[in-house]
Length: 317
Image 1 (tube, rainbow, N blue to C red):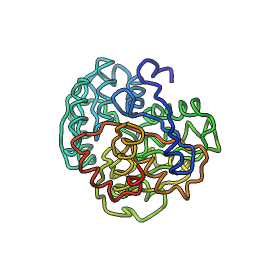
Image 2 (image 1 turned 180 degrees about the horizontal axis):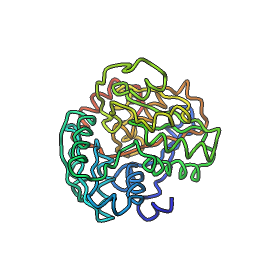
Image 3 (image 1 turned 60 degrees about the horizontal axis):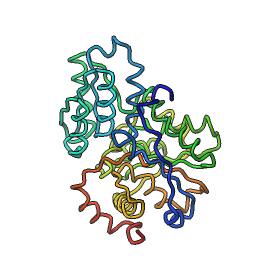
Image 4 (image 1 turned 60 degrees about the vertical axis):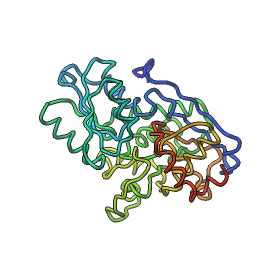
């Protein structure tokens, strides 16, 4: 964690009496939405950037991102004085694009999904020889994300379960390895949106693909393929993988806004949505929830609120 000192914030671990009562557990929210750049991704990007040699960094870095990794890479590269070009899909919220550009990176908006933006970034890397800084399938990136678990267990040593949003698997891989090292009996549960659940399907050995890739309001975890490096780690260290519906996510966003007075994006609300949707089967006394990011495009709030009307949490918010 020394390499990240002075770069990332030690974010709060908070609780809520009302929400504890709602789910019948002590719930602790790791507020990475309050992290520098508004999401946890700066941890992995900064640690990876600190590990690059001068030769690796000489042609700049290239990345693909739905938004949060982009901001982390942009900030970390600017701190080191390295140029960055980042490919982002067309559905990326404007707030994430503008923030990425503010931190000094050049953005290229292309493709209808993260996968298409990723493929365009790979072509650019071959053309320019820049260093491709992968958003999740990299051991250094995973290690950086794992510092979240280290902080959480220092802040609340009695946590018995961590619920983690999952896209390509970089966050949950780093968190699971770090948490199990510090507390071997802790349970790690991953959560994906039903419209983008490829890691869930691989974890449970379901036919691939188990369902069409339909997309999700949690664009930060909308990944079509699991990582080649992350999937074996997930299989070994993660205890379970669950899914949540779009209305589950939307109602969690609204509930977090109304009850904790905090705005979180879809991916950031997924873990809490999972705890509520699966509260009868997630057996935990002290449960840690990773609120992975808060970079929400506020123009989407109206449609999210409308979607939340069908969700299980909103009527209680």
